[in-house]
Image (tube, rainbow over all chains, first blue to last red; front, side, top):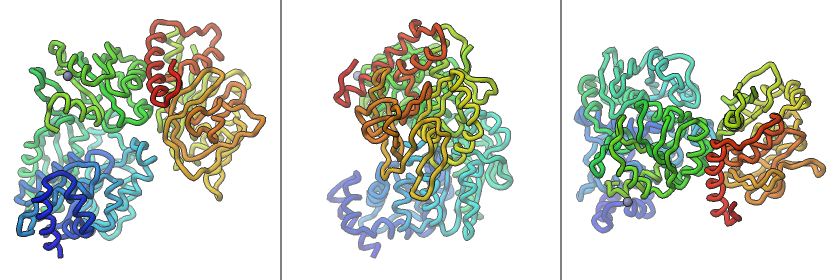
Length: 406
Length: 232
Ligand SMILES: [Zn+2]
């Protein structure tokens, strides 16, 4: 059955090429294709979900599993999860109808994930965190938790969860028939992040057993896994990346089992390259530029707090994807001190917040193209590199404008 | 020195509404006054800001507000001004009809009460008020029933507000609204109205205020143009 559907899919691929279109076609003519294929991997299906950090955690987990010799199917981040995954599957299907992977590791948005979860039989579900900041879409953290719970309750073997997140801890206490593996940070790491880690509710105490981020220094972290202290180089600086690494390590210990090798895992994570918008420094028009993607108030705060002090060339761009920028106001931006340019379709709104938080603004230029051209044309900064902080919509527009690959 | 009390910001800052307290304090500073924002006080604050939370904490917030009830009534009688937004506004009314079966008693500082509605609105809200046209955002799942003889904050030009016609409520120097977020930053005329009410000699004409208000005007005009309303 699956084989036949997969062969149909392979023929569609030959006709249709990449993109979400073949995914759409397959899902309408063979609605069972997606779940049947995902539930059919020899070593099972892993779903990574939560408010924030899913993408990094998924990539890290895939890297660790591949370093242990597993063949992994994974999905690109897309808006429509079902079509995106189906299209990615079709890309991997051979002409004889087989997929060259032992295990699937999928990143799922909590909203779309909850919709398709009833048809999936994941072996492991990884829960990153619950953050209160997605009110634009999900109204409140209780609703987010309910959606995560719908996905996690499908796990047949193991739920890997954030022990520092009080809401996830309360949920985990209700699970009876699966193994619960926890990751979290040490007292010391929490103390170094006085604003907390951005969770809707922080647990009152640190985890006693599990994978623990013992220390973070810039982009270097010490993580305690199965009794050994691993030194890991993170793709970018910040405690939240260290927590993502702990989540990935915790999940891989359960998946790989007795063959898990700590040094192999640490090397795999350390070899990961920073991602555009998440710490990568890119050379554009002869200038070195760091792009910082802001997806919600918590990531905005964490990212701003991680920036070097005294940056003298910063561009902040907010686009129409942030429907009501009011909800960003609890983020304390005063650490920026000075912003060279404020841009994007919500430029005036974010400029108001910066002004009230005593950040000096040199210029407001809502036109993103003009703003980025002028910003790049400025001589090199005296402190750090040129830094662009943007919402997802502005990231897409800037990449297109600068001719950077999407 | 003026004191702005920001009530339970850990529960009532979901849309950034508690930041109205910092807006009031900053504008007072820019006009040459000392100002501070506190989250608890035993002496009468000049201004009180109550923001909006999620429905899951309605009961918790209601209990917290009940403990402050005598203070709030006393402070308003002695000349403080108050701004409440979203669920904070609802809980300062007679009460909140959460569902047919659930009623949460409020402080009755405002006339009227919150009524359950069958749909959530998350969109622009534009209100015509005695202190000018207010442009902002509403994000709520209830309506508001205002008695015929009571004063609204203003009348709805775009959006739902209380019922598609009137918006918010006012009682003396207390103002309740569905406009969420730092509405005083985008509509500084409203902020200055509140400040002038409690701060004799307040004049918002410092350079800093002028520059910031110019940005606020651009933000309002951008929304007005999108909604095909006249720009300023
Ligand atoms: Zn250009």
